[in-house]
Image 1 (spheres, rainbow, N blue to C red):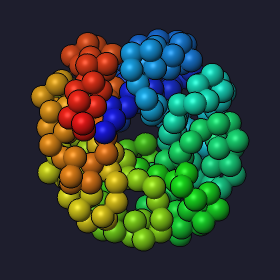
Image 2: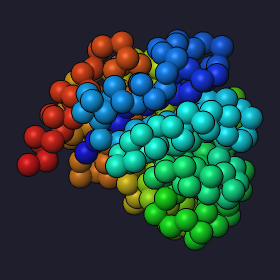
Image 3: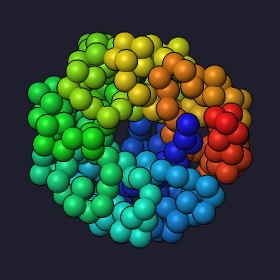
Length: 245
């Protein structure tokens, strides 16, 4: 299992949002590459990047920063989300050295796009399901649909996605713990590996993560907690590694 540090990019800076609100951003640095190197040095074995501007624009906005990180850490798996709404964008990121592209909004709008992406870029596609009260949100979390996350999990598992990143947006950036029940439900519905996101706060959350090892959860993304010091990335990963032995 992995603890995956998040680097959210907004206007070339590293930020964290509260509940996905662009106007409620905390800036943690203005050098994304240096931040990526820092989290690798702290024991990170995978990076989660989000182009926040791209999520609203519908196309890459912070692509240069993503490319720089991927080139500097070519042996580190990197997943990128935010504004991935065309096969050309996926190809752009994979050519830049990114390992996985996370399809969010476009997956809800056009599920066939996910199937097409999996066929053209097998083993490189992840679906990001961001939900509030179990209903999927789109467009940078600005709109909440009437589609259940569990229903989409079933659909995309059949399409051949590598994993699902499930985010409870009511908890994202709020330091309130993970919605484990909803996350486990998504994993069970789709019978597909799930990466938890939103609310990882401290070692209690990491210990709870370890308990889900046989329930389809393969890791968790963390952001504000490691930036503000309530969770030590190296200690968290070491705990999960010890539990897998």
